[in-house]
Amino acid sequence: MVSFQSLLDHDSISSTWSRKVKNSHSPRRKNATGYGKSSTCSTGDRRNMPNGHPNYPAARKQLTSFLQGQGYMVHPKEVYCPAAEHCWVDVAAVKGQDFWAFEYKSRNDSIKRGLSQCQAYANAFNYVVLVADRRRATSSPYFGSFKRNGFGVWSHAGFGFYTLLKPQRRGVLRGRRTVIERQFGWNTVRARTEMDRKISDWFAPGP
Image (cartoon, rainbow, N blue to C red; front, side, top):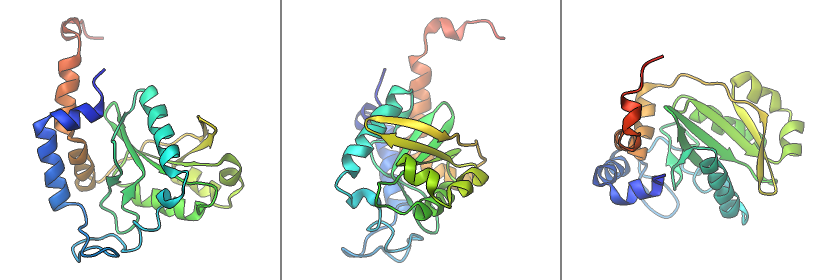
């Protein structure tokens, strides 16, 4: 199976899309503490993310490996989401034709903040999932809000990830979805997927 990282590294079309997105869609830093005026992100959002937690890199790597084992195509970096705030998705992935956003919360992170982040991603991703410690997620007064909003909740225990709430598929805003697709080099990914299909599949009889 061709890894998504190899697509980004070796496909010139994908690289071109990445540069375009970086220049035209991602917020630009004007200094070490803020973003340029063209950004719609809140200036403190990037600094307040849980990736400052010492266990975040290891947890993100575990989640990425788990998703890849389940057939997801995972973006190697955090993905920019064009929202008014909370516009950096911890882990973004594609499965089939659907885009997934995963927000990771350590034991010291706010579940309430996680809910608002999921709401920010909802118009750009088909599925949105909060990944958190099981006890903190289920005992949170906001747990019911995740269910009402159709967000999924996964628990992270050791090296495993377990479903507490299944996410509901949702419609997306075309403009926001396009920004996500470009960061994945979506047209290139789809073309490569078609190329990898067995020749016999092209001539298989229809249902």
